Image (tube, one colour):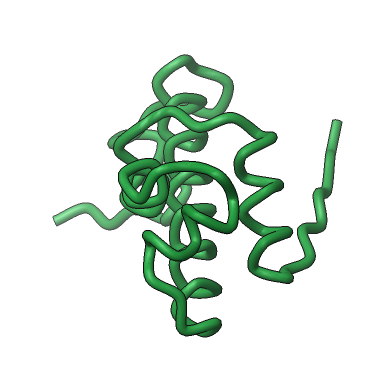
Length: 95
């Protein structure tokens, strides 16, 4: 049985870095992480999805879709959500 490094397994299963498949996978993963961060911060603040939606000016369903990575969301909405949660958002751009 052949063994693979993590990088080799990712290349085989997801696609090599720079390919469309790999880029889409990594983008979806980042969206999922943002949703998890929002859910964690919301629960830490003891807010329901409906309460957070009211603070942000969106419906509960949009908060749910974002937390579960099942819908599109704008960067502006994400910023408003983190602002409503009193959370700091740091971006790191690497070129």
